[in-house]
Length: 315
Image (cartoon, rainbow, N blue to C red; front, side, top):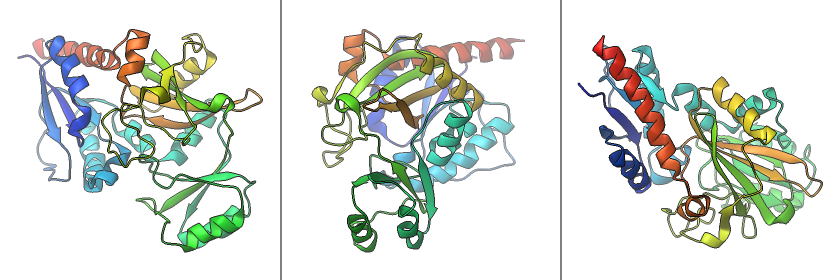
């Protein structure tokens, strides 16, 4: 029997490019919408390979319950020997920028200075330990919510005391060194199975945390709809760049199969990596410029893993 790719997802707007790539390759798949549910630990999960497409931004679409459900479900799958693309270790890393920073540092990758703060009442004191300017962000990131730049402590204090403060889903707010980007862009490196797919520059002219997906809501300030002017191929970033090997090391150490990793280059040429996105989405305009299809790489990975499952089942 042909093994099945089981796709765990919570945002159907991100599915069409993946489904197209799978259908073109004749990959058998099933979709599983994840927004809470039940988990019978006395039973075994269906056979096949699983692709985790649950995003840390799920709570912005009302699906935080799905995040908690998937955390346990991934452990259940792996306990029964199911191969999961971006499994439990990758998911835990994606849900925590603290873990991301520690993993990047362990691989010798430069990151911005960051203080993790639990409790709104502790933020003002922590801010006095930061150099200005700095930014705030959520530990469990999501579409730029909670990302703000502060150049003085008075404005920061007013934000913390005011109604505009947005808490992180887990209550962990990060204070992070602001790296002024050279050329007003950050760079996002897309990798599948440790291999470079492409890298792109994202304009920071109107913000410094950008999602490349086309299918976003009109009010998502950090996730623009189809504005191709914000994203362009980073033709100067090559597969032999030392960061690629270091990023591949981080991915291997954390069980990450698919990732979009972002770094910013400061005016002195120093590169700081600050975000690892497991539920990566590929920008179609940049793909056309690079003459690649990111989801085709994901589909090929799934195809290889399914072929291995078929070989095992045939024995």
